[in-house]
Amino acid sequence: MGTSFTRFRGHGFCARDQFVAAWMANLVREIDRLPELTREQRAFRDDLILQASLEITGAVSDCLHHIERSDNLVKWATEIGNRSWQEYVRWGQYIDGDWLNGLMQAQGAVDPERRYPAEPIPSDLYLAYGRNWLRLLTGDFVPLPLNPSGKFHATGEIEVDVVTLGKRSTT
Image 1 (cartoon, one colour):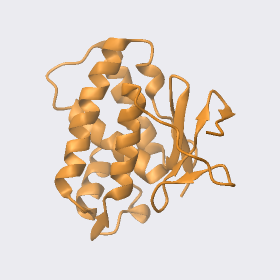
Image 2 (cartoon, helix red, strand yellow):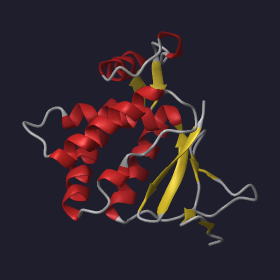
Image 3 (tube, helix red, strand yellow):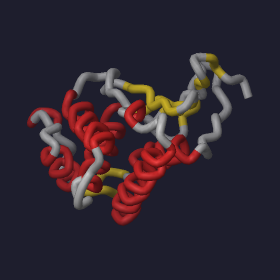
């Protein structure tokens, strides 16, 4: 499983592709509940589907370049992100693997050989990705201390890389 970098307005973090792809698929699910989209919103949505379905390890684009130049689009994406976040919170400590598979398959994003296990999956890493994604958009992302390897391991497999415009922070 690869790791991709999520970047927005000069800040970002690394996370495993499975968390990025699942977040994107859930964003699309929330976007598709809206009655209509602007051209820019549709471009963001379509790129989310593409990136969630590529399954190219370590090269998943965060798609945030579609919205970062417009505060209105950032506000809209934050609202969509909050809805996506609530869906994860609703699951509690474990997310149903079948729900994740259905979510990904609805976006055409699951190779049958790379399915999520059909069992409860701990939700903490999915929640950590969503929380960091929302914090990037709201400007509340706070770089965390680095360990000697240059990464901060929040929990388990999520790696939060404190890179600001390509320069590692030492604080």
